[in-house]
Image 1 (cartoon, rainbow, N blue to C red):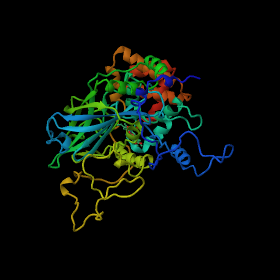
Image 2: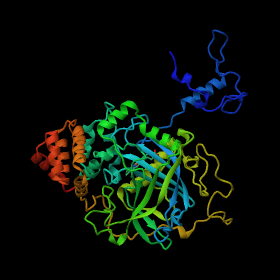
Image 3: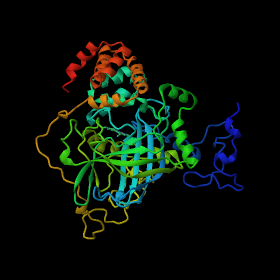
Image 4: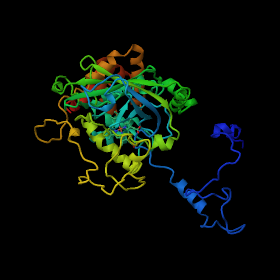
Length: 509
Ligand code: HEM
């Protein structure tokens, strides 16, 4: 058998051939005598346990994998720089926005959501778009997606939703019958499903898609004044998507086309860029809309909450090592510098816990000390020890307060305050408004885009075995826009009367 790589010039394999290469070593640095034969008991005997190099090599290899991310397993990353478009200190004390032209280094990871690490990059799926800003007052992770809304609005539903979307525990196949069964109980998913089954559901490349923070966050200025904000970032390469047919053709030729595209274009010096903006809402106007602005299934209409352009980021370098940097990168919506705070959005509140928790398990307790995650600002936290610690504590005063005052907490950095009233509860939000934004999104599509949306949705809905689930889904899309629902009813063979009757009991949820 001929191996194709035997023809690759040495340069492609990592550099020039050295005349006198350094010795191969063990993990502890001792030169290795032979890497070709194990140490055996004579010519016919077994391998000796004392061959430490062999045992170490195999044991180390056995531990090369860490768990893949429970969602967003397949991804690709790049480094870049954010440049502020102005001084936004009236809005936020976040230091990266304090002066026009101020530059902040970044790491960005793009991903697909549901399928495992080696899965094709052509599948219909939201795309993750996570930004890490190494600001001079600590990191800021803006962990967004390419679609501006989400399927659900309460974190308590996330594990069920992901279970329904992941392969069946019995067959290991992703099954539309399972995820539409779940979604047929979630009328609030109508907006996200409409966006996902539109052309936006398969971006042509990671460079050609927008990004959205999805939730409301808070900007807090030095006076402690709070505004709710939604972050959006617009691609300067233009949005481009693949139709289902184009995706199938692409996948047949190259199932990792999006990773290939990012490495190739950045390698050629074509540096992709995005414009970051924030929509701003005064907290006193929180109740002024027919929907709840803290509901992650809603966009904020641009005419009511106009955008402020905060700056631009550009990606200029791919990592030297995929595992060290991209795979061990850890983004968390809870990682925010002074001046940026979470809102009370119930989906975001659950995310604040989930990411750092999974990263302590997935990467290890000291994941924040790894170069890709490490803050560029000084870290003086008295956290110590734990698996894979590389040293943080420089003094024996590894506690606070102390008379030595080596570190102290600063009241200037207290969080903003939120007035509260009422009793605790476990109840849905009051302004659910599950359908109108999905309907408005549909209405704005061109005739060809509408046709593709209905075709894409019908393709998956026609694989659903339960007639009730199918009818409910049609009922939801009909509630968003009667023309949309009627076309879909026809495409999946459901009667509209049945569809309307099946969703009636859910309408009040
Ligand atoms: C990754 C949980 C909703 C975007 C993850 C991971 C978890 C998680 C556990 C794996 C993190 C890791 O292993 O490092 C949740 C929960 C959610 C939620 C509990 C809702 C309650 C969302 C939403 C968005 C989003 C609404 C978009 C706005 C992402 C992205 C990643 C990710 C982009 C990949 C980050 C990376 O590249 O490393 N999520 N997620 N997630 N999630 Fe979520």
